[in-house]
Length: 275
Image 1 (cartoon, rainbow, N blue to C red):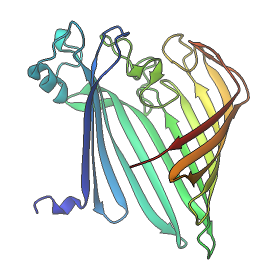
Image 2: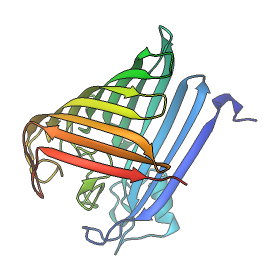
Image 3: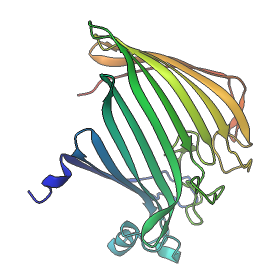
């Protein structure tokens, strides 16, 4: 009962081991998230992820506790790579139509046991039309900046990177956080049409300012500063008791990634079944 004032709440956590082909092989990865709804329509979340241990490094409980309690971010053998932050989402009715606004700040570094050098995201969405049959048309707008210190005092080539865990918060060449990796600003807007049978049609247009400082090697999507536009359209429906997703991603220019030139067009198809 002493937690009743925070409303419904949820806690999730995991621990895993990363691949061998890294600067620190078999790095341990731990993540956790706590969310609560103290008011109707308001959800507040606290998130944390940390890399620690690995081949040739301490992996005892003391090291784990130091990382968990935000000690020793760059402290020799006990150093850990940590990210943590806050998010909030408020759902409300706008002229009788469901709407929501949200924001997130994730600190790349730690100062005084608290996150610092924040990356940021903010957005809003709303149903703009709804039919008596249960179909509805929604619209959204979102901005994301993955530069450490995006809210002031920027630190390029810092996000998702670390002096000891030099492969960074990446797995097999892909960022485990924002898909466009660090030092990138993305502005997106789009529409979605959902039918009463659960099928969904969605289109989103984004402007991508990739790897804004232009440093090679720090961003896994582009080795240079690139500005491009991207259109993503997909259709989703229930097929054979699973969710089928069919989509097309188009950009107005090739991306110069460390793995080579990425094509302007990508077709994707997926089906998942939950049990």
